[in-house]
Length: 208
Picture (tube, rainbow, N blue to C red):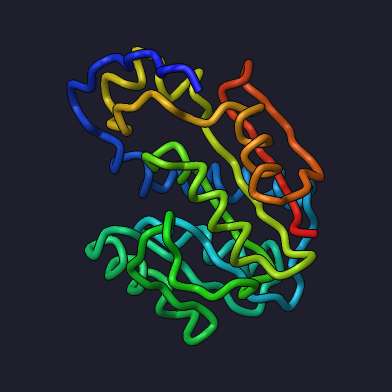
């Protein structure tokens, strides 16, 4: 792989203001989850995992409400976010569990889940292909990986980079790279949709 291009500098990191905002949750529910369900269907009665829950737990609720899962587990890197997310989804009882963990090295055993969800978590990871590999590992045969991402075209653009910190290696997902990473991890890409002039992509892949 060629050396990545240097990325523009970050002056003010306002990432958290968007990630856990009400507008972000609305976009995730009304737009992204609906697209992912159309591309990959529901996970009726399944046990699923969300990578990077954030503080609001929106993705965990969507797994139950939109995709029909019976149980949703989440992994989040930051202890403060884990605590906030647990409080946000406390009304869901034992149908939801949130744990602190590393999405590049999941504690779950092989074949633990019927689906894995990744809402804009890959471009925050320094080794995002390892995250895809872990998602593939913990899926049961026939399980689905649902991902949507802001791509390198947007994440490493000068305007966004100025106000949002991301890893400095310059290796961010592109639509093609995301599909290739899934195939390299042993998944079959069943559907992908790219919008906003290549700045956003949604993908569903299955484990054979």
